[in-house]
Length: 100
Image 1 (tube, rainbow, N blue to C red):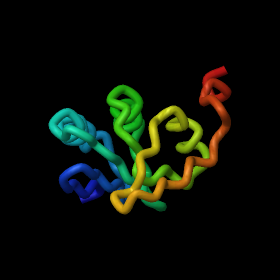
Image 2 (cartoon, rainbow, N blue to C red):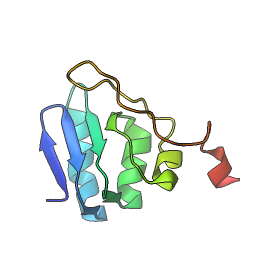
Image 3 (cartoon, rainbow, N blue to C red):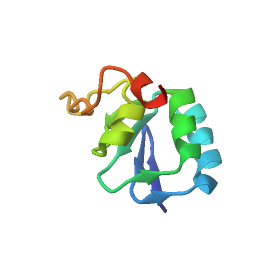
């Protein structure tokens, strides 16, 4: 599966197609503190990006792709379970530059 679900964490591991969006939305809605790991190599479809932007789950691991990082720059980055903060995404201060 391109998205691996566990309590509190969804890990995007591969190319994630639009068919994954409904299950991902259901998971985000059902988890009290959803966190998302956009592991290196994860490639979410625009439908999943829309869910991320609308639902605003915490990012456990921001994307390493600069374009995705810019799109998701406004999402909160949550601390890892061990208490250390995840690195902030390498992005501009706002994603408005992408839509101008």
